[in-house]
Length: 78
Image 1: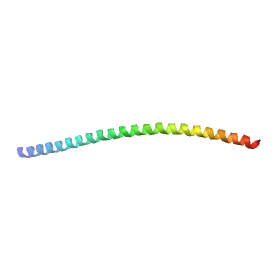
Image 2: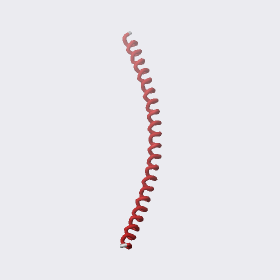
Image 3: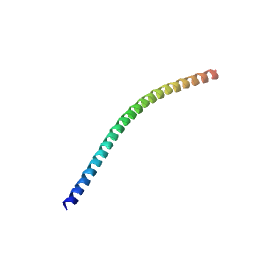
Image 4: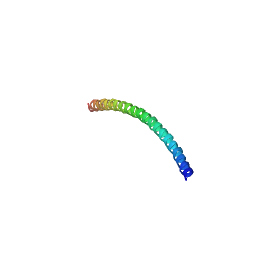
């Protein structure tokens, strides 16, 4: 009976060690993914800022083009 308990205890200790190692691996992977996520968020924010700048530039071009078209139409009417 004592040997059976001893065997079972040893099995539980081995299983506990295995689970603790798996937990450490999972925590490491979680930290790694958090770093990757942080980097991706930074890149996304930078891309969004660039996109906003490009939209402003394009809107300026659109306004310029509309002004040119209006000027051409006025010249053509004369």
